[in-house]
Length: 132
Length: 98
Image 1 (tube, rainbow over the protein chains, first blue to last red):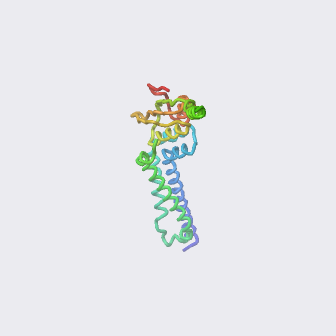
Image 2 (image 1 turned 90 degrees about the horizontal axis):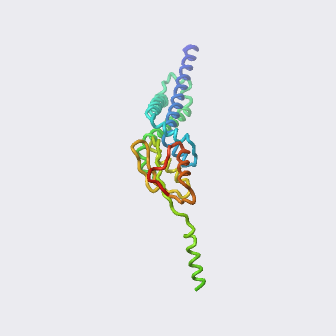
Image 3 (image 1 turned 120 degrees about the horizontal axis):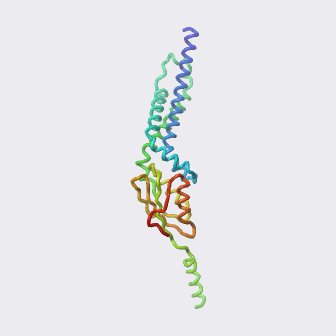
């Protein structure tokens, strides 16, 4: 294997790593966007935060399928990146040498998925757990 | 006997000084999401003495809150201001009074 081939593989591995993290970041952002209505405003008001922006945040509920689609696409790509087996030939790129990075990525993805599921279930759960 | 009468009159004094409980019906708009009615309710309940006696959800993303409160502590204008302060529309519903 020539030095040029190794360098090309290293760059490919780094690019792949970056796209995985970008997907993870996008997934986390998508999850947060999904909580902007309706969990986040409710938590803020319960903590005593007030302001017209509360009503503006809840107006984002109309776009819930847009934020859900974004989050689902980003999380799917992120999970694929985080769980696909790393081919032995790519170990030279360092992907096998940094298992902690992958664990962190997986943790963030699972956390974001939990938040997305919570946001999806909220409209059905809210009347059972919240009272006037 | 005098002491007994004095004690009895003193024990009733706080009741005589208490303000009347008032009722206001608030019509709230822009309840666009599942948690909106709870957000408005939480905001209203942060005002001293305010209790939500009833809530009726409307069909046009609106709702009617029947509120009970001590009129010496707050008033309908303050209730409306609290609701508009979190970005929702509020007005006194027809038939409201205190």
